[in-house]
Length: 553
Image 1 (cartoon, one colour):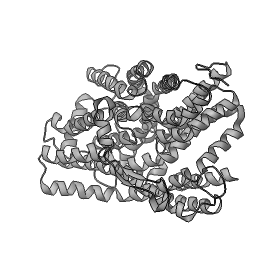
Image 2: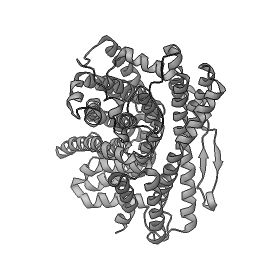
Image 3: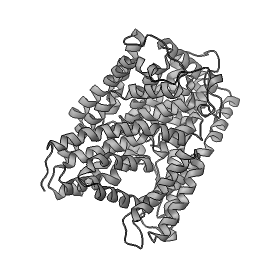
Image 4: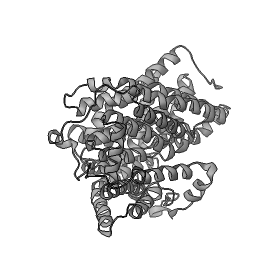
């Protein structure tokens, strides 16, 4: 009963957005209200706690909104300055094929940004860049989100793995396990399972792209690019897996993508494994209304600057993300320490919001580089005003959706503070899944990770929420703990394809703010395929008695 009530707000959000095509800005406030009702009457939470968690959620949503604002501002700045036209022409020199452009930007460049910054940044950058090249905004959003999966477990210089290890500390101590050995073994297996599917992810994404957005609505266009797509998958996955095995969780996505990007761009320029025919979207006059942006995007005329000058903002963004995210370089600690605190919100002890203004990608580098670009590209005051004004208008719908969505999640996360003696709503739901599945749990384990990411918008938060639950469930059922936690970490990454925060964010940045339901519905297909494949392989290994890291019972 309690598990159903915990799931009810999530179910309502999914039904409203997926079945009734409600925009997130309408569906999520309804789900928040339902969560409040469940919290008050089923969990016996105090009104003060619910109000405090709502305020905390709204403040936390501000972090994401700053990232979205910065990404949109960059796009609008580059569009108005003429840089996007130059970038478009530059990619046309490499290839006019939209499939190859999507792989280079969404898969390779997106993975690099994920490795550096994480937390939805790749889709927020890659999506608008694809739109600027002439992609339908809906297509750009779907592709960017699908690709933001394999790199995620090692995003933000390994933060999701760190999140998992932080919540597993006491569990590992209880079984006398070496935390460092567990961390490195977990890193290795997460990379291998991601890599197993990641090799084919560019091909799957291209098949879906041509099916949804091709003039002939066929997988054939995706299959035609199979050699190059699989090559691009290998170009990222091979260094990704090797780096994870020998160097740990901090650099697989960052360094793997850097190496892979160089390989793939060089191969494309040389025509290596390129498709024989060039694929493009139908003429804009034939685009469905749902494909389009609410604002004017795409080609705006002749290029007015050099390719280097046009790309300079993205180069600066990538460089700043790298140097500010690697602890050894010293800037990460300095910037992350710069916070504005709001302690004990509404009198609730230890409920403190910290705005890391200097470390947030939305401020440094996004807004900072936008300001630099105004000068670098010689923009007039009128053009600068136009870029900022347009950005503020575009972010309104996302703000409503995110505030409601994050507030709802915070209530569910923190509902352990109740008068009924119950676990939090999300913990209750996860435990119900575990107890109801028994030996079949291995098939459900990745979907617990997906659920955590879907609601929280983060692989890191999903791992913090459920890694301990996954570990202990495996322990009770006699399954290899390391492998079940691997499924949690992989599932949490895969959930980024459909997580509410990321979907709302990318819709806002590409200019299709009412398409969240369509995206979640369509991206559920690759999300479930990914999760089922890793679960199937893991089920086979466990059935054969395989355990790479036996722990004391």
